[in-house]
Image (cartoon, rainbow, N blue to C red; front, side):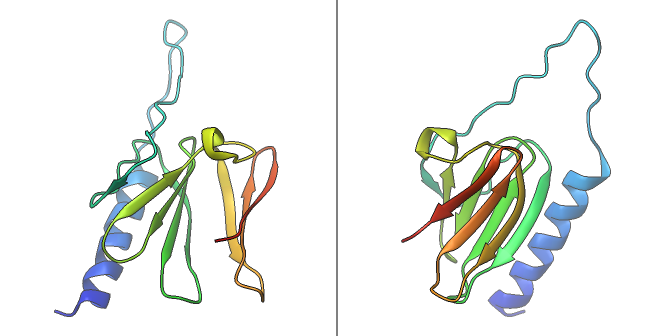
Length: 116
């Protein structure tokens, strides 16, 4: 099986896994998101749902989480971006690329721009 098909299967499995079950908080629990430290890893480290997936013009994948920011996958490792790196909010709603190759990230509190 080639790498592209494996990656597509991985994305589908992750999407189904995170979208099928969501923990409901009780009155006694405080729903505090666990932010992922900005680092490069070879594994997607989100614990909340994935809300957006985008493949940019260079073939890289962007994953937007429910409350942990954005992860960028270049085919080898994942890199994470949160409000600590300038995102408007960690709840990602959409990811798009403009004609100049800039990545626009729609969040619950406005848009953020990633310009390599």
